[in-house]
Image (cartoon, rainbow, N blue to C red):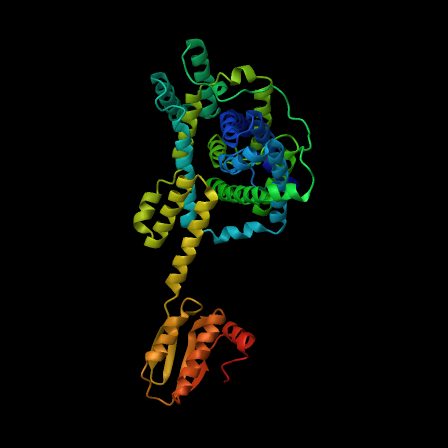
Length: 478
């Protein structure tokens, strides 16, 4: 146990510290932007990012993953903030944390196994596209020098790692190009243009809302939505980081950790947040692997705001845009183009539908939900074909007997011209899954007996027999 803790915290000290610093710099504009989306003061997003990152470093189940204020969560908050104000948002954030802790205790992470690979690929690609699209407003049509800085940033990001491996390329690019921009006097949009940064620490507060049933009725629908979307994005991001690093994570612990982080955040003036795929990719690509990188990201973010606030506001947006474009390129699964050609058509449709819906709605939960639903429908259609092969007086059933396949099974025996007076229905190649399957078998038996054909059910497996006995008291002995 101690060895594991030591490895997660101190197994990669230098790289974790440097990676955390890079993430902190990239967190600032995003936290401000997400605050603006939600309709709250920029410090609400910055405080949330600081507290969530620090708490999740200790409580999370995935070392090296970055959690903070996110766009997916911010979009859900808009109506609540508009109609009821910040205090209700903070109360909703606390309730979101409680719900997520309960989800973690109930081991909600088990649902991850129901998310197909096609949906995962679609989720990753949609996020990469959204990350890229979010950058467009910060550099398209602004100035020629903006394009130059974005281009130079990208060149540095892709060439520096060949020569310098000790310090992450994004950190070098931010420091070098911010220095050039300040001393060169270039007219560029900066972090300060996004919103006002207050150089102060968050303080403990209890949301100023009535503690009654009416308040609960107002905030509960928002809290439930935030809890589900937050966990969905966090668990999927956790899986992506698992794949990138070749390591495993404790997803139930991650669910509880997200809840603890949001619960605490609400008492310190922060909005609800979750794992961030963009920042997590930056962290991993910059060498971050341990819990220390997440802690440094949160602590250094607050250090930047309080101690270096005057310098932070002068960081050119084109440099941060270049970093996020690199993240979107690195996040996108470029092999998915081959996947579209080689994968079964239904999987390709699921992947494209997931991407399309997420990009169109900017809502990750809708895309993943519809992707899973489509996969389920395609799967049901695929296994709903039941075939019956006659061999003398034996009728072998091939396929699965359940609600979607029973019509074909019954229709076969309705249309079949059976000459024998005694037949056997062989279930060795099938299984009965539900009440519809039981009902279909009984219906066929009754249908044939009306034609004076004696029916014997044979080779029924134990599971099918158990379902038959439970639902109808009917078994193969009849």
